[in-house]
Length: 396
Image (tube, rainbow, N blue to C red; front, side, top):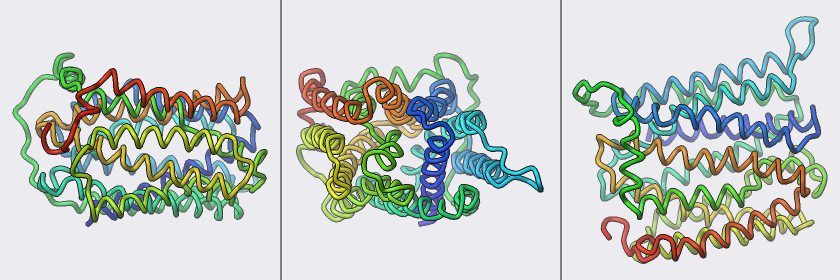
């Protein structure tokens, strides 16, 4: 339960942080391009550091790695608090450049956090409980994703510094709980870091087509269909709901995800998991099309909520496949590969959304991205037939 509460606090802090950074950037610049750059500058450090981070996660104490990364994110939140509030008579000194630079620091911290955190979970649960455990963990994360943006939007009324201060507190709480985790850590035999050992996770995934299909499906589906980076534009210029509405929009996918997580905890998927995965991705793409075309706040919330439920099915199936089919000695490096795909789909997807919105406008960007996601789901049936035919999580 300590791990669950730690992830709850850390995810809450992260969600509030992203709401505040996005809204503050759009207030400062009014630029969709700059919203995309926030995502890009979180992705680039992850692209460069995640594979070495996976090697570190397989060689070191994973809980301490996660705690150090949470501490770094808390320090970023404190810097943003000072920059937004100002010191003495100097006044606020926050700027576009500060937001972009600190986005890069956040990306570097998460590059090390994600592989270690993913590889840590199977060490705390027996294999037969892993699907339910991941669904329960997802429920906690979705609770934070619901509450975090809504709380961040509400606190933003008092100023950005209030949001960043609350973020720092959440990261501190999460760090302390992670440090109190107890599990058996057996240091592996000494082994020099070489290109072969660092890239061993890449080779492992590419040799197993089911894993390759599962993790690459998330990359292309969310890369094309993501709309999170553009939510400030929709909240301000299309739906006219302000920062509080932005927080509700960001939390809407998590409402659907929380409900789906509860269902999957009680009734986990047992059969036809490959088909369920592909259908979930197609539903996600369809929801993005509806959201892009909607001018109703209620319909937009409904589309985002359903997309969150569909995404939860995808996440639980993919993460369980990755963890079950990977030996513990390789979990850090394989989780690193998975993190690269997730980071590319999320942060690089935010850049793609911002760039395409600057060129085509936000509505066309989201609608075309949703159509692209539908095409990806259809193509994966042909490209990865073993994944489409996968019946059970625990064995082919």
